[in-house]
Length: 419
Image (tube, rainbow, N blue to C red):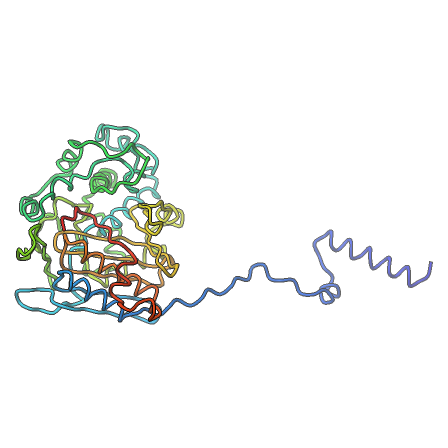
């Protein structure tokens, strides 16, 4: 055997031993071609710039459908952009103001969900445990779980369907009333259940009345204190409050206007009301800036653990469009550009609200029109989402920006729509 042959055998043995030990000699590593970096990820495409002209067009469309005023506030890495049109007060003629407070309706449900999920992550209750474990005898079916409430799959009838069958008379009957949670639940239990527990999605304010009852039972505190200690205080939401049953909105605020069932009748100023018919399902007051802060903080994990966020954002379809979904007190919309946004809609007498953010929390939008019970105005306001998150559409596909963006996402209402 030649000396060269012996050296090649020795080198081969050394390499085999090194590979077995998980070590690659420097000379070999240098000679081999560089392997692709399995950890390297493709840089995501930059988000489209918001189409603020399209946002304004959607606001104008909402006004064309009967809203005295409308506004929107969009945030991203480049800062804040706002649009405010029309009036916030028809009597004084005061212009719409993005600093003003208003009633956010069912966006309150996301506040309630965050509080309840914080209690879950603290080990004080379980998502898949029966509600009756914590509130013995409250519900007629032990199969209804905490998760069923948060996903609108309990089958509990929505008491507001009968309460607001006639818009203005129904509202005037409850404008100054103060209900207990139990009274609202009893109204629901007097109606047939809509589904078996867990079978299908059916939106019901009753679910979040029971969520309020759970929060107060488990925490030992009123819902107002729970909101303040767990969300409003930590996020420094200076314009957000839960003042039930006070009927007023403190400070600079938007006045709300309710459409009558009868076409041609004047709008009804619905600003002052207890909202006791909704409570933990819809009685929070806030502002565009605070809603942006809330949705951004939620999506960035400032309010819930990663495990709870995963549970909250695990969604199922709410209809056959395959664009709208519901998680735990949280909606997901899939927009035409492929962007997914999370948040909630709000309908309370005199106000329509949208509050949404991207899953990474880098972009958020809050929008409001000061009218309700007119679905076409709600649909038009929803056009702000497409314009803000998807940007400007090609001219050939969007000859009418307001109509194009609004029609892309049909409205979802949290109250019966009589018009």
